[in-house]
Image (tube, rainbow, N blue to C red):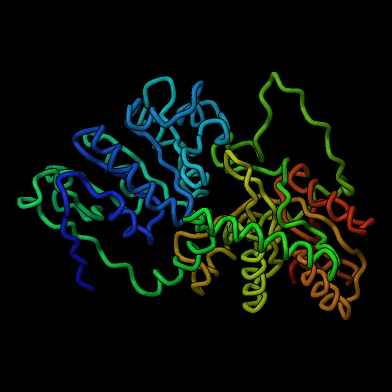
Length: 446
């Protein structure tokens, strides 16, 4: 076993920025301490350090912490329990608290936190799983005397503990920060992350890093403008724009939407949006509705790299979909593989991916995605590869499914609802793909 790295404390107050830099290999961490305000301050300092690298969601599991409440905008009334108990969307209960919109605060809400209800909720587990897939860091500020602590800790990657009396010699402790004077405090022990894990995570972190200086931001904007001008006049437009938010797409809010619903529904007081037609509605009973979520990334280039990597590993029906996630409706891309009529078949693919170490043991999940955009029908087997390659060269994540008559149908994306696919459909039609349609996926992967 690799010896832990020793980080000596530098001051009486916890150095959250120093600890934050050491949590790059973690996804969900609980911060515990006997003093709620000191614990919140430590968690906030860690969050600000990590927000320079990736998105961070800071969740108040204590309730009404003044250190955190001071960051909320005026009129912020909703919080965590509103999402868990009543299905209020994440976009309404998570608030950006930094200029770069990389740090979000999810307050407890108006009423007291019912920890037993929260930790036993399917919506809570789904929320954590979705944020893990988005490579965000989730920091849970929890009370030291939490009765359900033994239930919470296994749902996380471990705990950062402020003080010496809590969780003595517990294997879930990632690091411990002493509250004593520097000369009396024990060193902070931080386990090493294996080199391979660090390298893999560093690649993901770099994709989400925010600019640190205004001059670099200005320079980046100038480069983007120049590239956009050159691109416009030297190459045809991508069929699917990379910077266009899919306004109707599902948000991370879907992670805390009612489990029985495929996507979040508007509040009763808001008029329902018109139904989006599905070209083959009669085929709903034979749709191949299930696939496996491989990863969620925040650039189209990263999604295409995942797709190409999946093709090299012969993953079936690999594709990605465009999503608007978070309170700022920023663009994300969810990578899927597989197209099956039953969840058990998708689960078999997931197990195989774990067994082949294509996915980490905790990564991936089965998803209900019955819809796609149909690009071509009745494609001969001899032509399918060349057509799919040409589409992918234009940024369109096309894959083929075999039909009963021996031909193939080319699809793009995998969606929970027609509304998710609608913005991409409109973009494709604007760029000359007049025959495309939103459909139920039918066929087989082999």
